[in-house]
Image (cartoon, rainbow, N blue to C red):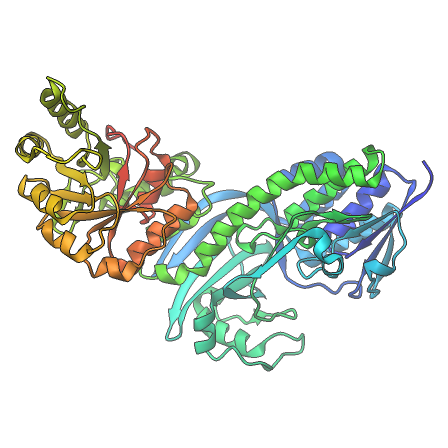
Length: 601
């Protein structure tokens, strides 16, 4: 092939790494990196690299891998400090390294491979003549902005305020501290990246930030251009974590996280990598890892493909699925951190468990294998016993809702036997009685589709049978009708559920008397939560086509937090892992699933 030119706009980890890889793979490429900042100027403190990237780095570039590994802190545990408790778990994998040191290594490695580096030299994609132009200029990418509609860009800002700082402290591992002052809730994300040095990122909600007086348009700055007012406030707030030491700034200012997605990562001879193409919230620690993985993929396809457009297509086809998977996890994590202030009164065990399971990557069941000690602590807290000797499945734990005690969290809802069958009564007695004996705390007979003329005397006999011979509470699901609700309560059903919200919810719940009153609501339906709280409802069933996903679990948690009402979720399938996780995380109170036998941790 003839000589080809590649210009990389941006001298961060992705750009420098890509430049070196391409020169090493095919020296017919002339590679130039333009970086607008001067050499050795860098934002941030420590950054994280995932094990999967380190493995690829060892395979594709052993020398760089060796140098990066020697410069960082490998694998460490994690802990949550909240309400005077320090909960620890781990270890976790990966590596944390100084961003400045990583850039120095990558810069030297790029020069060794024959890359031309131009620092303090901004460049405009519209004025560059090259075979391939790579936009590696970060979340605020000028390259992406110049291409405009060609890439189908979607951008939004997160709701929380955060500031990236450092501290001269020794940490055993990644440490999260949740603290509160008269203004609101604050959280720090701190982790070691070199002996005696740690990244110290702090975030809070915007209202708290404003109440603390940190919203000044032109705040006082220290010598390195950092927000002096914010730093002094946080030094007081996190005095115990810092051991009285000062926080370190590096052009550190309060910001909102920028969420970036693109329908296409390339246009004409321009292709994007890293944060220029896609961002993922910093709380999952994958930004630099994804960017360098992009570089690995793009270089491989530039070398193997017949022309750049084909290489771009292959690169995007390979990288988009894992990137979008991580973005999905990151979005869930971002939502959790943007609402952490609502959990400040929670028990540290539950808050730690919520954090660990916030993205769906870890569940209650998987935690038992990943960290048995922490799993026992969480189970013990959930069971109300620090000794955690019972080891009962959380779904088998009792719960009291509006004065009604349920022996387990398990709910089973089934229709009755077909009408007109000669042995329908015996079938119903055997079926619903068996479900109650098998471990269901609430057995619900679905009469919503049954025609008018219900024989309530017969259903009263079944309700008495369940109540007298099992620990379960008999329940019934009916159409949104006050007359049916009154008849169900008089028949002895301790739980009355409306299959949809009645037009007069207050009258319908009053008709149900002292029974638990529930309303089924499709998960996507917009509802007035305040009206539910004021209407006498005790339980909201969130109906979805499967076990609760992250969005449904978050909705259930919001309902519980804003109304104090119990939530019921699940689709009746045998799978219980997600439901068990949602119950322990405090998002769901009752789980629609098959009865289960209590099992030890």
